[in-house]
Length: 116
Image (tube, rainbow, N blue to C red):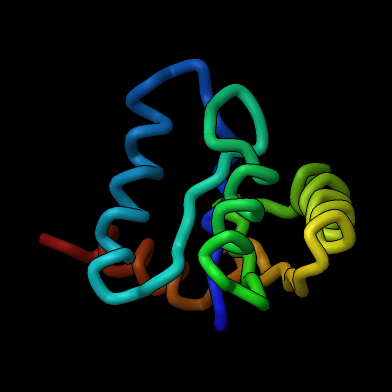
């Protein structure tokens, strides 16, 4: 069974974290076994999300980093977390490309800019 983790940076600002929670809430209407995790400064953390999905019977996790650019977190921290907790929980974890590389994201920006 497949599961998903939306991985956000995390913030000390509650409204910022709430925005990520709203994305998960909308996705959960049509997507089962989805969790939100924060890299830092907020909960739940990545390990908690992996653990929850494993306890729910998930055997394969796709992680979508909700980052716009390929900084250190995307290039180093996220793959390291996935490797660490894949081993710890004996579960396959794949990291998708960060959201900023998705052509749909570029189309969204274009559509917003071209609105009247």
